[in-house]
Amino acid sequence: MRRPEHAWSLRLPSSSQSFSAPEIEGAPALPHGGRAARFSELGFAVAIGALLLLAYRELIGFDPARLPSHDLRGVEGMLFEPSGSSPLLVFAATAWLFARRWTRFRNALGAPARPLWGALLWMLAFALAGWAYYIQETALLIPSLSATILGSALMLGGTPALRAVLLPALFLLFAVPIPPAVLNQFMYDLQIATARSSSWILQLFGGEALNQAERIYHDGRVFQVIESCSGVRSVETLFMSSFLYHDLFYRSRLQSTLVVFSSIGIGLFVNQIRVLTIVLNPYSHFAAVHTLQGLVMIAVGVFLLALVDSLFSRFLPAKPWWRRSGRGHELPRLRLVAVALLAAFLAATTLLLRPWKPLDVAGEPELSSVPAQLAGWTTTSLKLDREFLGSVGFSEWVHRRYERGSDAVEVLLGTNRRLDERIDFRSPKLGIPGSGWEVIARGEAKLLSGRTVRRLEVRAPGEDRQVSYLWTEGVEDPATEVLRATLALDRGPWRRTGRAWVARLTTRLEASPEQSDARLRAFAAVLEPELERILAADRH
Image (cartoon, one colour):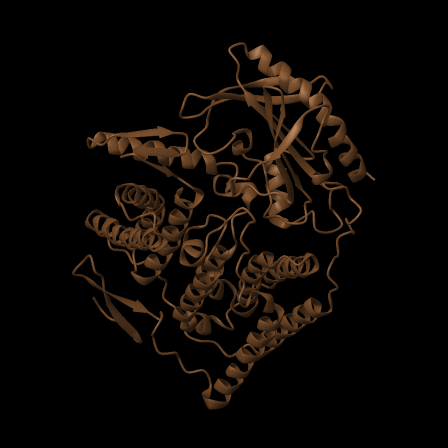
């Protein structure tokens, strides 16, 4: 194969062929007008970089705060917590991707610009950055920065410059944490599926394993598949790794696409192996061993990516995906000045913007004001199982057992003040008393007040059965809640009034289910006036 000028050769690990990569990372830059032009270029780069660093200063050291219901720390929390995002790793990988494309980007400067599309992306960047600083939500600065990079590329070098920075700009979005409003739509089902498949595999190889909801019973021990073992972050990590792999080894577009999408299945597979090794390893209850097993599985996943790529290489034609880079243009000083002015205006806007402040809620009645005694019912406080709830969080909660004679009702009350988009309680876990319980029947019931509630019959491992009544107030459909949480719309002028609520009442399921329902209706009749008293204060 003929080597074009300014090319270097890359030998692929899965093939004996060598390909020449014209004008790509590592290739010498074409001359652009001598020393004076290079100093001018450096000056513009430093100025624009400094202004953007000032505008996006809150991203320095950014790390999504853990949910109140999470207790993960260190490497375990950074790599496996579903609502995390490992921003430091994402930022480092983004910088690496951009550095590899610097020559292509530099050679594209001065090509026919796309000012309209560039201006639209800059407008989006301004809107997101302004909103992020106004409501003090750092995560929204990440898509704003991505839009800034893409808009600047279109203004400086049109489509060729956009191609050069497209992957780094989109890869940056991996630093945005997944909102719990999204996680709670599927997380518990994924935990249960992982526990079931693990039990089935253990039984397949002659082991004695039992599955109950998200629990695995094996060899006299009980293992709970918590959210960090559900596979969400394993899939996300390998999905990111597949993009880096795609960039490192030049493949056809078809092969790169197949490798990227195969990473999803590989992520689920290595997470399954991780759960099995935890169950079979007698020392896995030590945190360090648990974390080490996760790191090893990530390494195994990357190896499997390379193996799958090698298999694809045997059947797919070797058609490198890159385009030949055009020769460099004159430095577009007027365009660079325009981008620098936009960056300066963005930085000034973020510095001068006055943050939104929520209304004082000091006068609102708290959940703890619900009486400990209600019409002869006495109470005992219960501990909240944070590990089971995972991404489910509350601004305030009360968990109690009310007793009167031989009757007992467990009560869980939770609120969301809508000020923290990381707090969400739209999850099937809320209708379940705790870990290991599974739903055996679903339906509806009507309280004496006329309110319609969800009715669930649940079963524990020891065949203990209970019935739960569950209802919410101030919670909209899943799509609306996801949108509002993603954009933090409840932190600002579009804030909804009052608090969102969830209430769950649970009692034992009697031989006659009507007796259990009557007990819950009677208790709800004395609890609802207290809840209405607190809700009435929210409406004013």
